[in-house]
Amino acid sequence: MNPQSAIQNLKSKDALGYRHKFGVIIPSTNTIVEPDFYSMSVPGVTPHVSRIHIRDQNLSSDAAFEKLLEQIRIEIAFAIERVMTCEPDYMVMGMSAETFWDGLEGNRAFTERIKELSGLDVATGAEACEKALNCFGAKRIGVVTPYQPIGDKNVVRFFNDIGFEVTKIKGLKCPTAVAIAHVSEDELREALIEADSPDVDAIVQCGTNLSMLRLADEAERWLKKPVIAINAATWWLALRKNNIDEKIYGCGRLLREF
Image 1 (cartoon, rainbow, N blue to C red):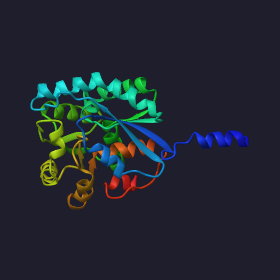
Image 2 (image 1 turned 120 degrees about the vertical axis):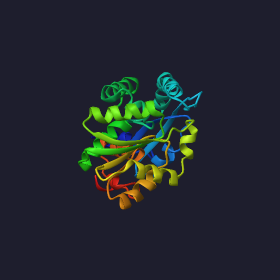
Image 3 (image 1 turned 135 degrees about the vertical axis):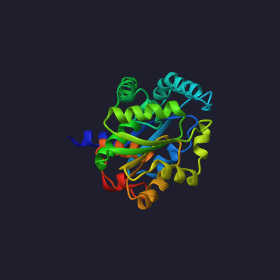
Image 4 (image 1 turned 180 degrees about the vertical axis):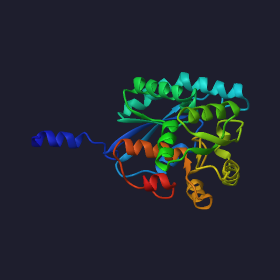
């Protein structure tokens, strides 16, 4: 490379995201995933959030839950179009329900749609949980979600499709999308205990608007098994797929050991 080209290449680097710029897609109602991703930041990697407009955040029934997902499917293309203007080099899904919907086939179709819309590779929560569980060699899992029964059904279907047995799932049935972020650490601790049993190899928490990073790290010590917070897993997958190997502490074993 000649000196002039080297100077031009240096100038093209983002001042803060000089290693990678991640485009992050989240529902407009989500207040947890964005600060979670910031708290797990590493030098030179920056998340850039675009919000999917949620006009009706009611989650009080299976029908309402499906209606929210319909809004996401309509609005997600606009959110991607907006975030692409900052020229990210990778996409991260800061939402989880849609990434589990219709099992493995649904997840793969969703991933392909995001790639088509953005032209970029993408990390999804469902795939992140799959990769994380494989790291730990887990086969039987407990699951905690904020969802209604229809959401839990799709989560179980996904894990069954990829060869895991869900021995217990605890759905918190949060009444609105914003209310998911109101679930307290005490409530989540009780949910983890309820999802656990002696035959469970690991516990997975779904729902990116649940605040779980610190508790997952703590719970691994008293449950004596992996506790996978979906925001930690999704960020971990995005980093590792982009050859970012830094260890991050305080968010669970996954980011610390793999």
